Amino acid sequence: MQTLRFNPFNQIHKGLRALLYDTALLIQHTDFTDKEETGRTAARIRFVNELFAHHARVEDDLVFPMIASYAPGIVADFESQHQTDHELSVTLEICLSRFGETKSPEQDMAAGNELLQTFNSFLAFNVEHMKKEETVVNAVLWKHYTDAQLIGKTQEISASLSMEEKLVHSAWMLKGSAVHEIVAWYRGIQKGAPPFVFENFCRLAESTLSPARWDRVKAHLELAVAS
Image 1 (cartoon, rainbow, N blue to C red):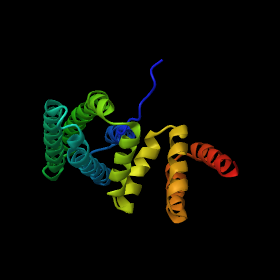
Image 2: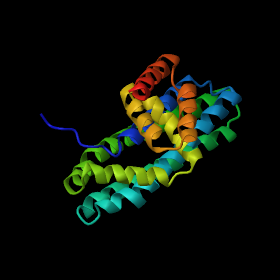
Image 3: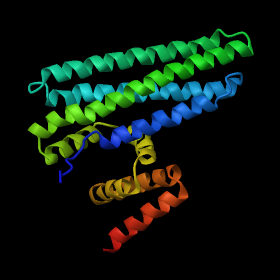
Image 4: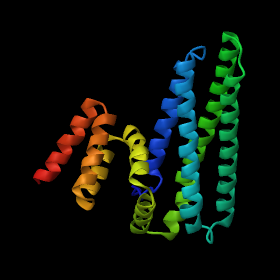
């Protein structure tokens, strides 16, 4: 049976997919004739654009250089895909600007439908793009780097973020991850970070996860402490 290698994209991609799926539902639930609801949805979409742009910059600057000399064609292809993603983000911003031009509930609803369809294109592109990174890019990384080296790279990327950025990213990674993945992640924080950092992450998990999932995480962490 094939042994799973370390997937450096796993945690952040799970968080980004959770954000995409949650935002798609938010758009579907929005009454675009209600200015307050529309404003909240617009703010979320701008947040999505910001996080995906940041993620692309990290990959361009810190991940793709790792394989540039081994697979320059693959790097060029994925950098081109990032440009396509940027263009989709710009189209989303154009859709949001439509709400400043609408003059009737009917026009609000039409603008909302255009936004939904455009976001669906953004979602579909990014889900497929992330799948390709976890297969095509990882295949090159696994051929030339050990798991220890890849773990070191993810730690380098994490260290490049401010605490505020870490907490923002981590909230969505918590929503997108399985309990056993959260437990392993939090054990690493508990072991390697100052106590106040672990406490911050625990407060984040408590406010982000459902009570049932947080209780399961706590139970595992308490067992780890007791052992």
